[in-house]
Length: 114
Length: 114
Image (cartoon, rainbow over all chains, first blue to last red):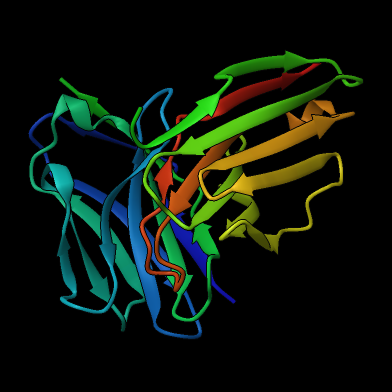
């Protein structure tokens, strides 16, 4: 069985500060891991994904995430927050050979203060 | 139009009404999904269609009835809904079928059941 836990339903940072959104997963087989972002009144949009190549994955808008198997983590970071980063972020996991089922975390809402 | 579109964007219905949600993808993808997004809960996968065949049905009540007439269109027929069915209903599509695929989401239909 798979599961995803996002630590912190709300995170607040100042503009220009480091963004760190935490995600831990559970999977009995090597996982595929995703981060999606949702802006108000929109659907989800892919930020980045890990599918077994490099463990450090770079995404859009300056975000990156590192797959750490020993810690079962896939935390999302950005060195310098921008006001436009304010949104809800979802971590998700699917399994190799698991077909279409993707499990999403509950989401972390990021607030950026001027 | 590009990407994934959903109509209507907002819907208010009584518990005895029948209505349908429509999703259309312009990406040439083979798989389409319905998700339910409720406040403070993770995304819930409802149905998945691959090449117009239903491959996933996540114990969804029979008052929700999906239809996939072709690979570009997906409907969700609603009847005798309950107030707890009020939520954002998201449609998504993907090309890959091995779990590695990026899902492309529409903007959603905000449903309110009175």
